[in-house]
Image (cartoon, helix red, strand yellow):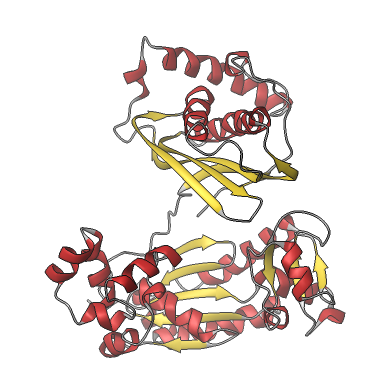
Length: 401
């Protein structure tokens, strides 16, 4: 059965909201994120700002050099989250199958809604009209038979546009696109693919699956399927966060290992608390470092037994820190837990009974009630300190989706 999938992506979401809130900013180059003179990065840039080369995740110092006359605004996350909820309510009018990917984008499966609202293109138009009329915000929409193609289509429709890719046109639509359009392909992966003769999606289409697997390994099967427009992923309305994490950007570059450990200790406690609150366990711990030259390094450990305690998360994060260059100045540090599963899903924590992890889990669960009453600064397990100082750095939440 052919599916009808929409990918709705709000255009320069934070900047568009700020422009709506202050009409005097209309058409001006707006940069939302850290402020010039401070540390941190760009969260969102309006299209007028992007014309000067400013983009999200760019160091704010570089953005200020490229765009000294821009309008720089701090992030107002509570406002953006409230508007996001309004957007998602509009999408839910047309189908219960809405899968939010972040505050500003979502997939919709409207296959079963076409009898009520017209075909997928008609629904896409209605969604864009509702968002514009009720929220005074622009949205771009991709329409396609798969999630992969719908997401590419919405990106190509920006800003404030709509693009349909019919089932019979999927292969020819994808063929001329660079391989980096395939999700999961970053700059390093793209360079590696180019070295093997795959610059465009057409290069993947020209090979058989077995040939691509022979050249690229097991991931080649996934790449070959996507290159051919085959994507069986369903729209999942019960979309869970893929990881829970915390990170901070330091006011000054850090080379003191103890300061980094302080941050990891604090974040491990927060991440573990959030896992227990949501009744989740993790099988992977990841360390994130951004250095003074803005290069970002991530290291992870996959675990045989699931983790739900700060004691274990901190231990794994510290082991990862031990494996990196201790002399390079660090501007950002973070820790996250991923490969999440619910406690009940065949990962019984009773497997830990009798060992140190079981004891730590009992202690930390007992402290959760105190923490819930007095706040997360109210109490922290002394067993976590293990000789390290416990001065807490300022941080920002980092749930990723």
